[in-house]
Amino acid sequence: MRKLLYVAVATLGLWQSAYAADVVTIQQKIPFNEDAEVAGAVKRECQLEEHLSEYVAKFGNDGGLKIETAADVSPSSANRVLVMEITGAVSDGNAFMGHHKSMSVKGKLYDGGQLVASFKAKRNSMGGAFAGFKGNCSVLDRTSKELGEDIAKWLGQPKMDAMLGDLD
Image (cartoon, rainbow, N blue to C red):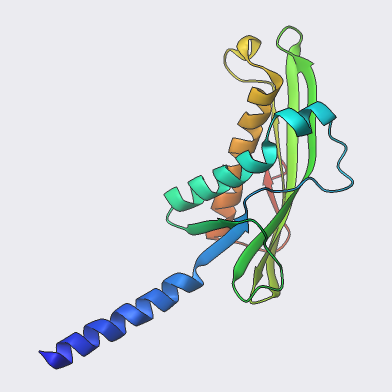
């Protein structure tokens, strides 16, 4: 009986170690790239930085990955981290003339401080169904949701220089 207990504890310890290695940490707020030309109103009002992070975590965790968020994520971390930045957000048009929105992101996956994979992603939207009843931030949120799903799928099988979303 005692031997069985030791085997169970050892197996649990191995499982926990493997599980911890599979955790990917991402930023709670994904920053805008310093060169990104994004309207001030979009930066102030749409909360794309938080929404994108939430969507990546949601779709990743729903898909069987273990994604955690942290206020600060460093490429030199001993753990697996995905460092992302929003490289663009376009908010042209409106509900009456038609929406023309897009958002782009790039990211690098590090494991133990070593770069192991990277991506660039972009999603465009004209607002979808009932676009005439949606505001600018609502349509941009739609693009961040799609990007979150794209990035989460990529995390399941990451590769170097991947093109995601409408870039694929």
